[in-house]
Length: 102
Length: 153
Image: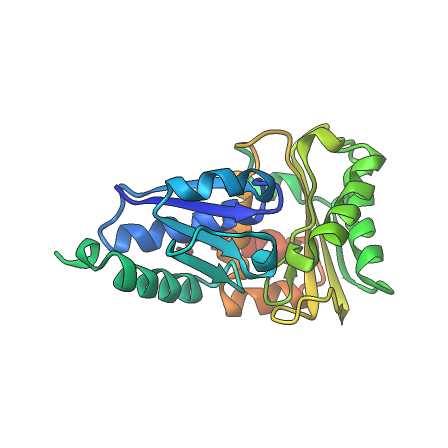
């Protein structure tokens, strides 16, 4: 099961918007069982090593230091389902192509 | 979970207005939340401080800002307010500026506000509906748009 971490300033706003955008995309890709956890930037650092994919609002990019080789998506427009989908699909194709095979 | 339609009233919506800068716009939305006793005045300061500290990441979509702070910074009740600007304002977010639509959020816990966020994301993520929100001049128009947004996916 794919574990995704959505990161925002306090884990209450933008990261939840990200999660709401991710869920339909994941279902569409046949990954409806993936988990999306929302967290504040302060807590994110310790959690990033334990997830498969990290999704961050682009504006916070310089405040997070993801582990090397961990896929990270930076989203500019959090309510743009097209942008979210394109970036998720690109990351999955690169890092977890086996998940997209059906 | 609370429906956005119940939270947006004459007291929490200000349409087609102007503000001199982003802080004034955020405070305008915040003050309405204070007036309906959804938060303490210090929560409004926290929303501004938060955006200053973390940068203009509260601009979550093109032309759309979602100012908020932590529940423990003075939220009394989950509520949202809406400010729309006839003259857009730069928040300093190079990708999503300028901002026309500001939803200030006071969330009491981790769940109560999620349905409202879904409504905002669905409506504002749709270019057609977002344009309608930007140009709306009455609360009724906003309520009608929210009604339709229920069917958006």
